[in-house]
Image: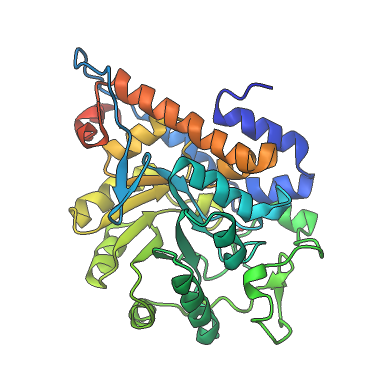
Length: 356
Ligand code: HOC
């Protein structure tokens, strides 16, 4: 089957994954309004293409945190990749390395960070981190990933509790016994007093607050990127707390239902930050023109979550690579068709604001 666009991978994954696994990845919270709006919002935005600008040569490269990547798309953190492909996150890491972009490894990986780094030693990686009640647990993971050469910490701040995902409750979804959150293997000694998805959930600390950003900074020299900001007020606080980046994210619509689509929240955050730190986005990216719109509205880079998992389900490492390659080709084409020869030429003039 020739894969032409990202939704081809979605259809394949839906047909081939078990129902419980499919439902887990597809899940949004409650009525899934925010999950669905993440995609619909792109369809409401219109572009203002420029013509006759010699687009015979185009360059999609950009940088994130000072490192060059092949185009402004990376892999967002998603959990449990071994559910989609037997080599799990090791395959994701290889597929991403092949395309020379950034892979944000989830804490809830089914391969350990050591296995992931060994599988793709030249990959550019950030690590997604939660703050645990047992700060020593977070601390030990921070030191591990720093020693392994991860280049930034992505502090996820929108999960004081897990969102209500109805199908996961109906399916009683949990990680099957042959899979583990390998990063916790031998690290969490005590039996969990409560579990979600078959993994300890009492570890997540709902009392996390801005002072924990200072705590994290005291542990590491790595750049800290806060994932889960949706308002200008929190964007300003992030800058004031000295972090190096923000990911505008609603956790794929899996947490608070009723919050904004990320592309709709982006502009107020970019306007507030005014270039003081980099702003990224995840949620709802399905085409190269979606990437173009997000970059035009000020995202330095966007990250894809579910589409990477669909690629994995299709053909492991090769599938992840194909998903990224298709998005790269589409982005390059959209750039050319709108008169942009390189990423620096993409700006807000491309967006038709009267239609927003
Ligand atoms: C035990 C807590 O990000 C998701 C993942 C994991 C959520 C936290 C699980 O499913 O959205």
